[in-house]
Amino acid sequence: MSESEWLALEAAKGDPAAFGRLVRQHQSKLRGFLLRLTKGNGALADDLAQESFIEAYKKIGQFSSGNFFGWLCAIAWSRFLMEARKRKLESLDELSEAGTDFSDDAPEPENASLIRHDLESAMAQLAPMQRAALTMCFALGLSNEEAAESLKIPLGTLKSHINRGRAKLEVLLGEWRKVAVS
Amino acid sequence: MNLDEMLSQPLPEVPDNGFSDRVVLRVKAHERRKWIEIAMISVLAAAVACLLLPIRAIVGDFAASIILLGYSPTFGIGAAVLAATFLVDRLWSERQLLQF
Image 1 (cartoon, each protein chain N blue to C red):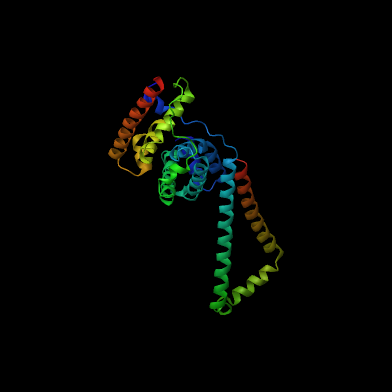
Image 2: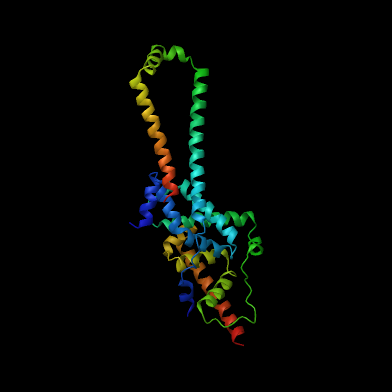
């Protein structure tokens, strides 16, 4: 049993300090995930993260076992979808604070921060489901099964989102590299 | 660096900057609200029961003996200890939540 799972079960028994430790442990990853989903809108990502933790606290009794962070991601994803529907999805683009343009004079990606900038810019071009699936399975280290469960989609659908997302990223990053070199 | 390696890079660390404290404060407020609601519902239910039910007829001698018991120092101390234990338990829970 992982430490998070143990803490979640303690919190479910009514130990509020255990829940506090869970918040501290997972806040960075959850906010990072939501930051990517909201295309860099820090304020919105933090609001969603806070609401997700509060909802998790209210529902902690429903957590039985497994990957606590995956369970938390499921709550965050459904919060994100609710917010996206409220804002009619496309307005999320306008809300984003991070620039998604890759200008012609951008330097060649030689260090980690430039690579990250390229990746985030390309990620912002993907559909939210592709963004979520790729982030969960690669950066957050969830298994395909856990990610599919969190996103409430069948495993096959998740894999097709991952494949389509990867293909689009390959194209976008390839195009930008060509522009940067020329 | 290939695409899979790029994607597998962990997400950048987001500094806490009081975020966890804000969440814990909201959890604490939620807990407090829940207890207030439970107390209010209990009082309301008792008030409605007193109004609608023939309490005197139902409890009769039992109520009289309870009132007599209330004058007993032993019973009074016992009840006070129970109330104090409950209060300390609630305060301790809230304190722990803030000091995790």
